[in-house]
Image 1 (cartoon, rainbow, N blue to C red):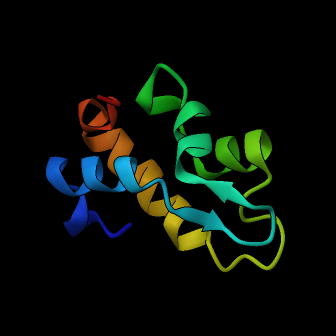
Image 2: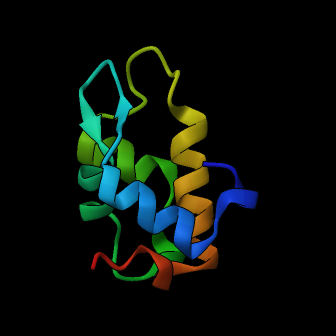
Length: 82
């Protein structure tokens, strides 16, 4: 998720679609969102890697995890599931 896509409507659409983020470990977006800490300043790629295994295989989804964590730090409120 690129930061220019860190818009509430786009994030909400992704939450509804629940795409597969990590193909190596079959991690979907909802699994990553459940792993986000309460305090957005405490989130990092490592947090999601440890909790889900995402981006610990081939690394192809690393940029997606980076985008999710950066966007969560900047705008945590848009990740509220309806």
